[in-house]
Each structure stands twice: as structure tokens, then as C-alpha cells.
Length: 78
Image (tube, rainbow, N blue to C red; front, side, top):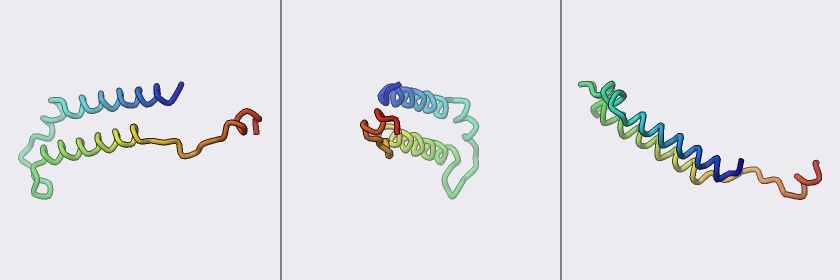
């Protein structure tokens, strides 16, 4: 499987994750009269999850292979 196909799969999974975490049942769990650090819990949840989704998007899109093996080493079998 090539890198583009894997990246596309990761983006689809991340999209589905975003749909789930911003959907009604989870949002209703955090819609309480509770304050965390002076911020209503629902607002804190929305912005925290939004930040996490954006950070994961950056990781998926900007990821580069840190270890690159030269082709001549792969072909020789060393």
C-alpha cells in the first residue's frame, strides 16, 4: 500500500472521529452546569476536541518519513 492510500485512510478515519465527537449524544454528556477553570464544560470540550482534531490533521498531512532507506541498500538485501 502506498503512502497516499494510507494517508487517505487516516484522513477518512479522522473525519469519522470528528463526526462522532461533535455529534449530539456526546455533546449532551458535556452540557452540564459545571465549570472547569471558569469555562463551561461544554465549551471546554468543544474547543479541546477541536484542537485535538486539528493537531491530528497536521500530523497526518505533514508527516514525513523520518527514516529513509536508500534504494541501493533495499535492492542489495543488506
